[in-house]
Length: 260
Image (cartoon, rainbow, N blue to C red):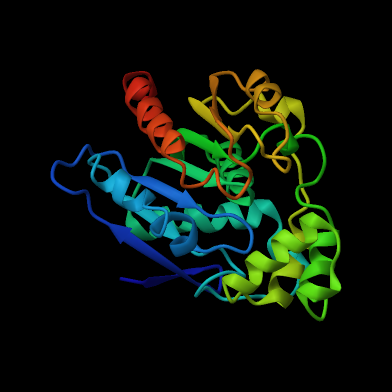
């Protein structure tokens, strides 16, 4: 069931799903990618089902500008630190002091900013669909904003622009808000900042992902990181892949004791 919370004046949508059966006492927050929402990124690919059946309380929300959350049109509203603060306020709203955090693509960038700004809140971190583009480059190309503002998909020829515009149309997104999001969330961490993310981290990227950057280079910058390669999957198809799910569950199990 969709619920709402206030984050610095914005009304943001979220779901809070109880574990199926035993409760590990290890809640996990899921942060979706650009032009997606909690349902497309996490419910439909059966991530929520997978994690709750593993005994985990799952919290997933619609980022500002996405899904059923408020959609500001000022690019300044989409700084990665502000979007990370939304996740922290959701934890506050739910009375959760510390949680695992898993993000995909833009959501992984937001997750990294959260882990850097509030390390005491993040128990373990999963960065999906994001490699060294966290520190090199500035996220998705600015041309994606132009693609959001194009009159139609047919007006675009660049493959990446077409991919993201088609996805935005498929998810019935507010393309004005998405263009603002692309223009406002163009931040990177420098290597020294990445090195301060001290929690156990899994970097999970498809082997055919041309968007994320190199997962091994990013993992080498993080003090306690490992890499999960998702064979044969591109940026979009890696999300719900069975190798991705199995690898995340194995990571959470393997590093459970060391994260406490």
